[in-house]
Image 1: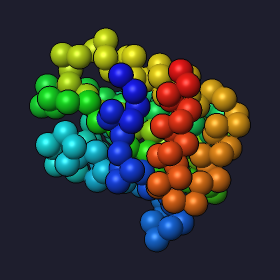
Image 2: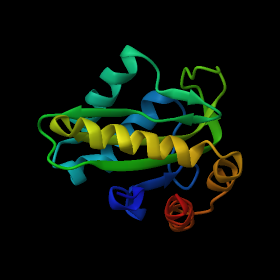
Image 3: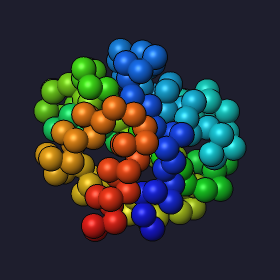
Length: 155
């Protein structure tokens, strides 16, 4: 499975392009709006799932990256969305650094293995500083999607 199987260009938002994402909660709300239609749930449910997971422990993994994720019995498919915040937001990351890349995932509870593989794939993709910097520098969703598609195919 590739990330482009669960991510679409329409589920990528760059803050500053008419979208204001000033903090963790705003980024989670934005992910909720983007992912909800793909998993046939309402935005507030997806936001609540992501927030509940964040309340357990921050998904800010360091190096400007956060991977909020959750699973639910109501989801029948796995879907992802991406919010890029070039200015950085406070996400309570483990390294205390601002987060620029917020890659959210919602999936079915029964597919734990697939969910974990997806999180590992995202983490592997974003561990490369060059990829992170190029993603933060993207000017639109199309260029971000293209970069993810190219880099993910290399794995």
